[in-house]
Structure formats: structure tokens, C-alpha cells
Length: 55
Image (tube, rainbow, N blue to C red; front, side, top):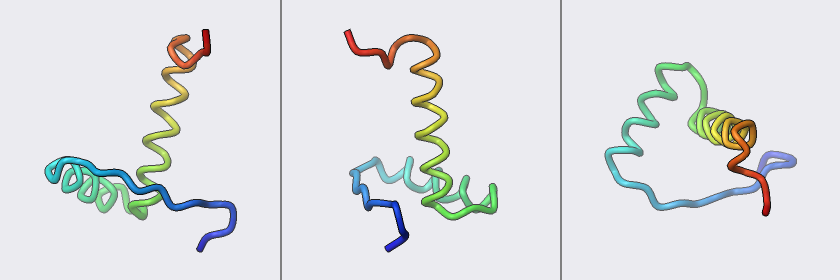
């Protein structure tokens, strides 16, 4: 296990998994790093738009 990290399992459509795997190879990063960056960027975008704020 990597220090400070936790495993997070999700079920995704097969075609999306394939696209993400290919994109991580194209970006020359591990699948974990690619998904971490994608999720972080998406959440930052939501927060900057005010959609991630609690009511």
C-alpha cells in the first residue's frame, strides 16, 4: 500500500475503462495517477463554479 493513499473501487462502463487506460498510457502516467488527477481537476472545477459548496 502507498503511504497516505486508500483504495477506491468503482464500477464503470467497459468502454470508459478502456478509454481511461489508453489515456493514462498516452499521458505516460500510471492509471492511479491519471484517475487521481482527473478527479481532482473535476472537483476543483466544480468548487470554483460554486457547485461543490454545501447549502
